[in-house]
Image (cartoon, rainbow, N blue to C red):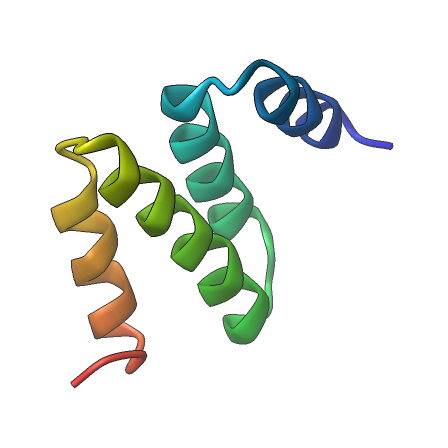
Length: 70
C-alpha cells in the first residue's frame, strides 16, 4: 500500500472531504493512464460538488479538457 492509499483510506474513515478532494486530484496527476486519471478526477469532482468547494470548477474544467463532457 502506498502513502497515498493510506492517506485516502484515512480521509474516507474520517469523512475529511477537503482531503478527499486533494488526494483524488493528486492520484489523477500520478497515473499515466487517461481513463484512470479521469476516474480519480471524477471522484475529486463529486467530493468537491458535495462539499460546495471552490475546487469543483477547475476539476470540472480538467474533465472537460479530457473529453469527459461536452
